[in-house]
Length: 457
Ligand code: HEC
Ligand code: HEC
Image (tube, rainbow, N blue to C red):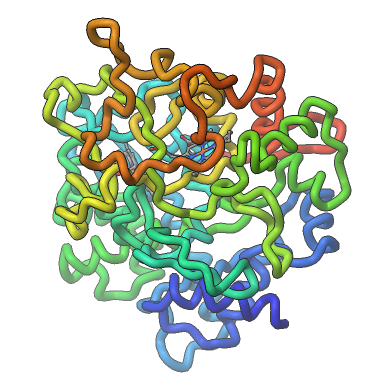
């Protein structure tokens, strides 16, 4: 049980606001978090069913659902109801100001809940022509993102407790919220996304075909005030986002490989090695590729906030203003770390699970293929002119981060080279790394390649 206890401690932090019994919590953490033995992982991989035997994630039992004295069966039933409602809300465009935008418009289930189109930033707002400054991320594998901490220490079961991993965790690219419910508030109210208000959302829910189910799940009084209805909507969305078999099934080819149920091709194996090699890609130093000490499958992120100097995306409307910079954790979207220079230019390391289903990469969506991304890592420092703007024959390296923040940029491999050195990867190695990244897509069926398996409706 020790291994599960370790997982639980992290989840307790995440779910601190939830009123749950310790027993439900550790049970759900063990069930849902991650198969922690090869046997469970291999069962998941071979059935392709992931953690379907455990449909209640620990953080998914909102306090409101859990009144003192509820039995476990009642708690599970209430999670089931909220999950079903959350799913309907997720696809419901009537919650938006324009009536045209649902969460699913930007987070498509067929693309691991990232956008179906290749736009760097999505369109929204009242006229559906407004844009923000960031690419919409995948919503899968967010269950292990810890709450934001300026100085993060892993639990002993996951890594080395004594190491200060620096700023880590939180949702969105800059880690500015910790809970799915608080996150959902952002796009619902943002003028360039769903552009709604709590009153509009409440009116939409009251008029929706699921209004009765909403009352059943949240109680008679849920429609007494717009505020109560809005809060319930946020809760239901958060609960839906924690459905293990949809959001963290661990059914990629790589999971099957780790469980001993699939072989990687020669190219994929070479790619994995380059990915892990500390002198080459060193990718795994941030995008963890190995099981944790307690046997949980890798998340392909350590959730650290890091500056890697992604080039300015000049196609973004916000960047028409030469004085505008998206500085990640130090603002402007995030406000609590404003003026803290050491947080400027850092963004949360995304998971690479299902990354091959994405069509725009990095926080500003500047690249549109994995090939381009891997080339950036391979040659950012050896051939910066290939990635950054060149003005009067001089390359403007790190053109999206003012020079006063350059001390924040990561300089570990693969970012330890200079012009004249060989790029980290040659052409064949770039292909191998991309081949490996393609093994991280969920829905792998032994012998049958990779299929994506979520009924969207
Ligand atoms: C117009 C497109 C758009 C819509 C609609 C939208 N999102 Fe997002 N979503 C984004 C973008 C862009 C980000 C990254 C925001 C940032 O970093 O500031 C994001 C981030 C997220 C995250 C955090 C992911 C992470 O890696 O931390 C979650 C969770 C999320 N959205 C859920 C939702 C939910 C729930 C809805 C519906 C209520 C929704 N989104 C509607 C574009 C959208
Ligand atoms: C020092 C930590 C670090 C290392 C090393 C690292 N990455 Fe990343 N990776 C990040 C961060 C941080 C981002 C997001 C950066 C941003 O958007 O500003 C990212 C983004 C990505 C993305 C885009 C994902 C998305 O959803 O947009 C891919 C693909 C990727 N990395 C692959 C790799 C590969 C392949 C390697 C090795 C060659 C690697 N990374 C090495 C931290 C790292």
